[in-house]
Image (cartoon, rainbow, N blue to C red; front, top):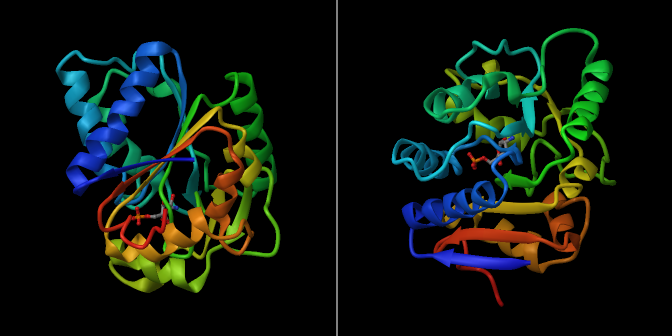
Length: 243
Ligand code: GLP
């Protein structure tokens, strides 16, 4: 596990974007695993500038997002499909047909999950997976529990996640209680992983996840077992790390 610690959020975002630019320069038809949340917004903005400047192209890229809320239409402004269009896909030269966000709509969720795994496999697997980290150590929507769920699955969100994400909704009652997420096995199957985290609020969980024991109660701790992970932090998020 490699750590890149930058003085502030903007420089952390730039450094993480550079890792993606490097990936796409080496392999223009890369399969990217993408994350939502506030943290990667600066990274996506940097990538949009890079495409505008002709520094990188998404023309041959395929993407698979980590997760989606159950019950939110793709047009809902808090759905993760909407987030991805708004923060990245609408502003770069990507073929939208090659962008995938698991659908949280419909009754056939088991089929949707299996189909998502099949599509990732058919695309050749994920070359580079982007992750944020939840306040409770979740990655994607893999919440703390007693085991590591392997494949894409549906889950009940924890109260702490519902509360944390309620800041983006008009009221806490509007936050969906369930989601669909890639599994820990899906994420660990990526050839390379980058994690982004910023701010004092993430310092404790960052230290726990990346220097503490590997336990499913802190889902992100499993990343310590992956051979190619780079964690991009700002100084605040790194402040409790004892290297
Ligand atoms: C959300 C997403 C995660 C994200 C996390 C942290 O619930 N499902 O993929 O990494 O929470 O979000 P933020 O970056 O806003 O702190």
